[in-house]
Image 1: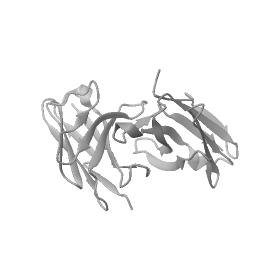
Image 2 (image 1 turned 45 degrees about the vertical axis):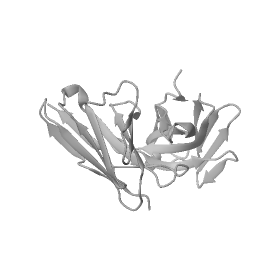
Image 3 (image 1 turned 135 degrees about the vertical axis):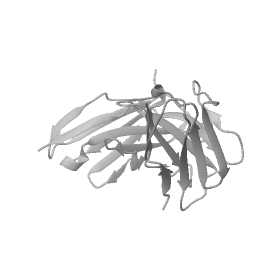
Image 4 (image 1 turned 60 degrees about the horizontal axis):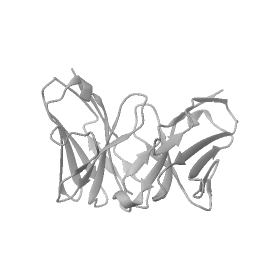
Length: 111
Length: 115
């Protein structure tokens, strides 16, 4: 089993749609959680951290369920510019802070 | 803040030569930096953890004699791909963070093509 697993995608949605990405992690020692966005042939960029209480940043909402070891990202009113690969990332805190990446979910927002 | 600079962004080299990639933290000190590799259509895979002033920690399956890491200062880590072969062609990215609970910042990556 992979340490971090995501929906395989790709997700093809029209502009304005709401889309949800799911992610599960296997290591219960995981301490911090992130969603990154990666555009084609570029480096990943931090979209948002994920907190146990859930957090929102504009059209983006992230949730964490530690009991189920599950993370989600909701994008509302999707824009063409949201097209990218979304990476679920977990910090295994007891391993020197190294990040473990999910395989990524590709999102394509169409006009 | 938390800017990581990586150089070069792209390199093409002949098989058998060595390539050095630099990763610098510009506005913070990084005792630890991470090196990742990403093949097309795949996610980032951690290669090694670079520790300032001590030996790097390599992930299982990564050859330490082939991928030499030097972290001689608090702002610079280098990855040298020695005797590169076409199968080493990949996107290499470094990352660092001023705080382990802070989102990590990535360098812009180095696209290596070995011909």
